[in-house]
Amino acid sequence: MNGSLSRFRLLLSLSCMLLVLNACSTLTAPPAEPMPAKPAIIPSAPPNSVPTKPAPPKPAPNESLAKKSKQRTLTVTATAYTSHRGQTDSTPDIAAWGDRLKPGMKCIAVSRDLIKLGLKHNTPVRIKGLPGVYLVKDKLNKRYAKRIDIYHGKDIKAARRWGKKKVQIEWGHHILEAESEKTAPEKDA
Image (cartoon, rainbow, N blue to C red; front, top):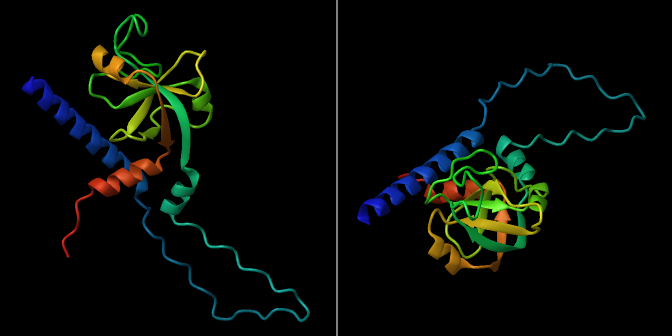
């Protein structure tokens, strides 16, 4: 029991480190380019001309990333599933996008309507009331709508205890930024 628990903790910490590294690598700004020299003589505006507004400044790379990944929340029905043939298909450890599922992974399956809302492959999701960040790794059958399925490895009892609940989810890449800020070591002054 202790061996499997320590392996689970090791896998969990490695997964968190990979998420942080991935988030940090996408957030690094390109090196600053030197500004071109301004001409010494600026021609004056012709009389009776309408002054023009200066162009708005371009956002920093991190600001544009935050604007692209809008914060989104939604209340959905959440059920649970495991890697057993009776709950999936003949390849219970392989998810819809080809990911190999392993017990201990924080991942979910989403209904097709949620994919259209932006919950695509590997989208980070926070489920209110549950710790950590889950990744979208699987799809539900077409008959379901506004629904997620939380992966419980091979633990059928835990999946049954979860049952069926209404939960609020939040998704977007801003979640990884927030998680990386939580886990970043504080710098000494």
